Length: 441
Ligand SMILES: *Cc1c(COP(=O)(O)O)cnc(C)c1O
Image 1 (tube, rainbow, N blue to C red):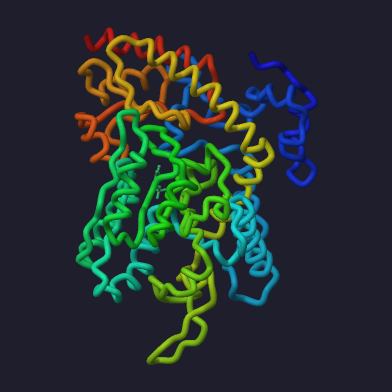
Image 2: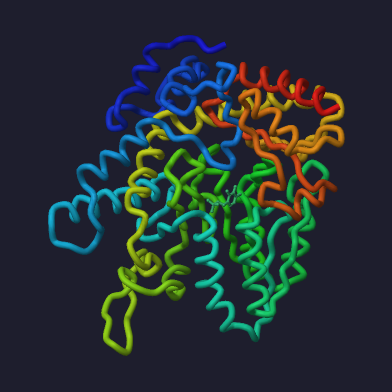
């Protein structure tokens, strides 16, 4: 299945400045995803379980593993260039600032944003969404005469739901819920109808669902929202690890993601916002770094993006994110996506063959994330028995409780694959699941 292609492996092993993306390679080489060498790049995958078998990590939608070069980059940064940014006039501060702002440029490039100051660093996706709900929310609150509405889809993560509930309560605005169809895709007709018949100020939508795996047609959804004068915030937390994102092509007004799901350290998130919107928005946290001039009585605000980055930012985490994006770009996002499509399709076929297994979501466009119920078995019991066999999976409502309840469940088991997972692991999983099931019967 995986042919050993030394030329490609060598090419991937080169530092980023010398290596091109896989797009430059001939098509026949692209077929051969260098799985073995990529797996070696992840120290956590080299561990064994108690029986001496392999550890299988199927929980990348909760957080992804870190490649050695991300870990090393962060450690080296602390050892050589670390200091606080934007402040002191010494060499370390200068180098740290260069690395931190360099990471911002790497994110701009990765998302296809036009301006580097359209990229704001936060702690995670949750904080990025709260930033918009608070700051853009201030503008909305001032406009209460309008009695606007907000809209979310049924498949939102709590992080892209609860902040909008709070804003709706603050503005006395209604929060509308966009339904999904039988296969777990956004119901496009209902979506357009909601926008047509309501004064919706903003729609918050997941690019890819962390439960169903559904990949939403964001460009189409954004265009429809814009036709009805609504802004769109896209939650790309599950999209950036699995697919190419071009915020300009999507025409998203806001786009957020979280570093730890794209192989970067935890503690770093990103908000992209269109310049005009970010300019109009007030700061949402106050303190050092976000100010221009300060007297005892008042202060004026710094320029974008620092207006939104109060206090010492996650400096090393941003440097780690830069390394993670470099790693991903060296493999090539299209190559990752192609491999994951093949792996995901075969995993889906394996799961569909299991009697008594109900898959949540059968969308045509999807990422390799699968949630399911098995007979009436408790998902936590299944996950515990799978863990004993070396499989790391997640059980529960996956921070999308209303969605899981929509399927009549209180919890389900989730298998979330990444490019470091293999066919062999998927095959072994089906056997392990059968064993766990027999033990619970
Ligand atoms: C994980 C996730 C989030 C939240 O990410 P944090 O890092 O916890 O802020 C938001 N939305 C989706 C779709 C997610 O998968």
